[in-house]
Length: 156
Image 1 (tube, rainbow, N blue to C red):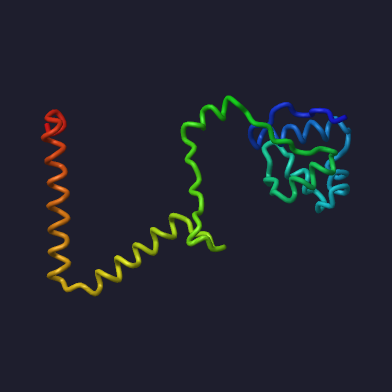
Image 2: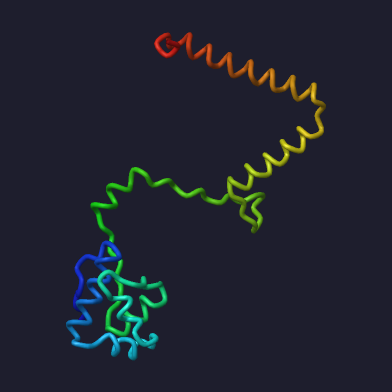
């Protein structure tokens, strides 16, 4: 049966504190921890100093935890999840093209559309590009005028 050693580790400092408490509970020295985990001599002292001289990297973290008979368990925190839910953006799912085995994302379609538009603009004459830009500007102004007519308070 597993025993919970640190009920809630929410940040790096509480993780280091839990490791320090485990070393004290086992009654071992930092040199012993270095020897058990295969770290260079004196490295555990740098990791567990207050304040730490070195930060524990991802590989060293699991080596130290295993050497102390510890492991990590990730648990959903409802309080933090409720705060974050309003900012979560759904992932764009890939779409199949012609039922083939290749998947194309919406970003891919946007990119090839943009590339095609750029290629088209290169082939146009400067006069034709200017005419297209003028028509687009007229359409934008017409849309803004229509909004202002339908909502007089927005035009002020």
